[in-house]
Length: 327
Picture 1 (cartoon, one colour):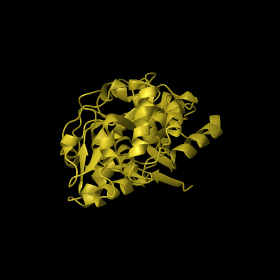
Picture 2 (cartoon, helix red, strand yellow; picture 1 turned 45 degrees about the vertical axis):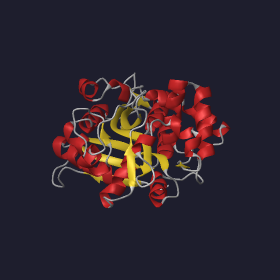
Picture 3 (cartoon, helix red, strand yellow; picture 1 turned 120 degrees about the vertical axis):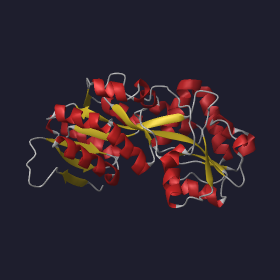
Picture 4 (cartoon, one colour; picture 1 turned 180 degrees about the horizontal axis):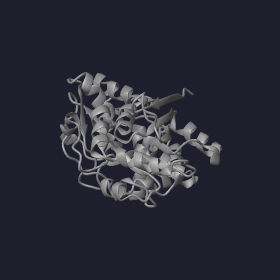
């Protein structure tokens, strides 16, 4: 697994009095501008180790008290929940974070905080599908969409969290019926990533699908006439499914005060704008305006279930998808 170690300094001629070490599952190109801005503002050096979510959690657990990590940054509430359950994080007592991040986007025990919001919703081929034909995730299981649906693999945590949220709202029996309907309606084998799925919809291989919105944002940024539209799911019900990328202070942090200061900075106006400007994610801080491209998708009602529930029900969701034949 490729690991990248970055050392980001305020100015080469000034020795930093403090440093903070971050284990990050976020893309280097996204996080570097954030850490550059933090170092410039605070004078605190940021050292970063990047890897996939699973290996980072395993490394943090194996290192125990000897870990150099002060901060864990990762994607999906399920991964953050797992880190807290395994005793890898410590509570953060921060008025700034409690003020900037809504309660449903953070751990109830304040061990981690969402820093960007990722909506997973319905997308469609604009030539063959009208928005008036769409409504809910559950409706995609109806016979009307047989042979027209594309999905990403159930192995991806994003889909596990979506199904977990459905279990929380509707129970296992109703959710399993929906997932079985999805499988029946598949136009082709499941995809390994959302970008390939979106391109398949644009090409007419399928007509509808479910993706994280920032994947569509990236494609539209490069190709404004990309023939896929976005529909906010479940707006007359509980709201569209949302997830987070987020951060927490590690249990054995050597510099917990600097670690907390970094996370507070990532929830600030300046950093939240960088999230939405660089990666087409929605800011977790509701005071910040989204990027102009994603603002064009219009306002939406999110499902305000606490995102930690997605972690709690992830095992149940995985088992349900397996029973339903969703691979």
